Every structure is written in structure tokens, then in C-alpha cells.
Length: 332
Image (cartoon, rainbow, N blue to C red):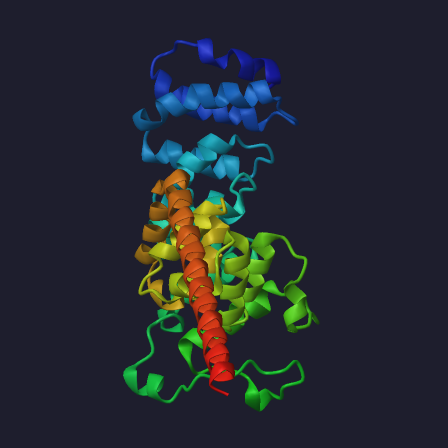
């Protein structure tokens, strides 16, 4: 079928128009070697209004056809990817029209069935691959049992030359999740020294410090990014749940996938199942950035207030010491 056939297909009026047009339009489009933006827009304008009127078989046929199409229209592909995995599987497995953000959102909305299809992609982002493995084995992010917690005393970060014996115990689920995320995101041979984070853009600094497993590193980076003091940054990350961290990441205008990666590194126990991931993505998407910025302004005001109180106390202490010294000289 030629390009000319595709351009004129929308005006045909044979019986059974919706079903036939849906299939025929996609078939004609897939036959184009290099479709123009106008032709991509035409296909979406024609097929999306018909979507709810066509059968499951037609949707399955179109999904399979577009999965092999190099220039598939993104809106139609995303609509098909929301279908049950029996329809969406070819697109989830092969389509280049689905971005990494799309894939993470699909996993959050549809859970393991979609995740398992996505796992079969040839060049899958390592972050997403790890997320799928964590969903397959939720014990990786389950909360530690009480008896395990009592055995874990706070430890100082190991130096770069630390031996294997000094590394976090891989049997501890949360530490294991952080270690796997860290090794996945860090280039091979990269040093774990603190100065690794100096001079990096905000997101990279937050990501790398979050993936060290040392919360103090991340708290320092967060304080720098938001221009707040360390005590406030620590309170944001040590609250139960991730609501405060969610606002901080939204205020920094991070994309959904970047915000999720940082959140799961800092609070791995908050994401034991796909529904928890979906809830995070929904909450992040619905949180208005201006509301998040208001929260950050309140944190900055708290930081300033704390600094003023500290200066007043210090000034009073110096004045008291001066008075004591003056009284001592008079007595002598």
C-alpha cells in the first residue's frame, strides 16, 4: 500500500468503517518507509477516536504491527500499552516509541504482568531491569524484622580501600537493595570517595549520594540543593514515609523516573509491591510544584529562624562572659 493510499484512506465510507479503517490505516502507515510528522498526526487523528469502537482482535493486530514500526505514533502506542498485557505485549517488548518514563509509569499502573513483558526488551535500562527484579522478589525491599534491626548498629562509612568483610551485609534487604542500585548506576571502576560528588549537577549529586547507602551524604546534598541547613534536610529524610521528600524532589522539578529512583534508594521499604510504586507516581504527578515550593520556603524560613536564634544565644553568651571578666577585674 502506497503513501497515497494512506493519505486518502480516511475518506473511505465502506460498511464496517470503524473496524476496517482502524486496521487499514495502521497497515498503510506501517508500509511508509519514512512517514512525515503530518502523516503521523493523521494516523493518530484517525485511529484514536475509533479506539473504543474496535474489537480486541483489532487492537491486538494493530499493537503487533506498530511494534515493528520504527516511526510509530507515540500517542497511539501509549494508548495501546495501557491495554491488558495480552494486547500490549508486542509493544512493551519491542516498541521504541515507549520512553523509560513511559515504561516506569506502566509498571506502576499495571504491575507484574506489564513488568514481565517489559523485562524482555533487548536494551532495557538497567534501572528498570532492577526495579522489575525487585518486584519479582519483593523481599528485596521488605521491612527488616525486629530481630535483624537490633543487630545493626550504626557504622561509619568504610574507606575506599575497605575489604569485602567491611561492606554492608548483603543479607540485609534494604542494604542489599541500595548496593545493587549503586552498582547498577555507577560506572565501572568509579571511586566511592566523597569528592566524587563535587561539581556534579544537582540530580546527579542527589542520585549518587542516595545510592551510597550513607544517609548523611544524601542529606548534605539535599541541603545544598534546597539551600537549607543540614538539620532540616535530616528531618526531611528521617520522617516516617516519603511525603516531605516528595515535596523536596518536586520543588527541584525532577522528572517522575528520577524522583522515583531517589525515593526508592532513600526509602526502599516504602515500595514492597507495584501498587506502592503506582501510588508514588500518582502522588508525584498530582503534587503541584508551587505547593512544593511553598514547603521549601517554609523550610528555608525555619533554617533562617534557627540561625537567628543561634546567633542570639551566642551573642548572649559572649556578653555574659565579658561581664564576668569585668566583674573579676573590679574584684581584684
